[in-house]
Image 1 (tube, rainbow, N blue to C red):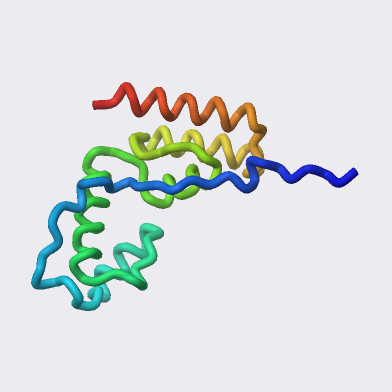
Image 2: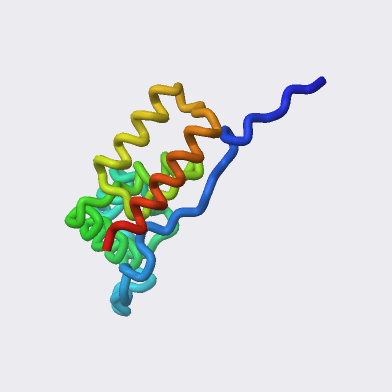
Amino acid sequence: EKPKPDPIAWTSMEIDLFGDSLGELRPEWVGLPVLPEQRDFLEQRGVDSARLYKAQASALIGAIRERQDQGLCSYKQARILARHGIPAERLTVGQASGLIDGLASQKWRPSPGWVERAREWAAQTARQQP
């Protein structure tokens, strides 16, 4: 009998950390290339800027800074958690770190029960925040 694939290893989800917080794009920057310092800022935070324009990069940088000011998890943290199907949009840096530490302690192959509990906890945490 063939072994069954591990469903957790292939779980993924789309994440939208920024929602409506990107606001209006500056029209004079639409179509202009990303500045080197914008590219560096975004790429240091795990955001691929290859298909962005200056206006989009500026909006993303503003949204990232706003998340940082609110103490919310980083894009890199959210991406790691999303690979395991754990919603991270409203988690703090510390909460996301705790979950990532839990994943790492299980050699990045957590049991389905652990992932389900983490998902439930993350969803409950998000509902409790304003």
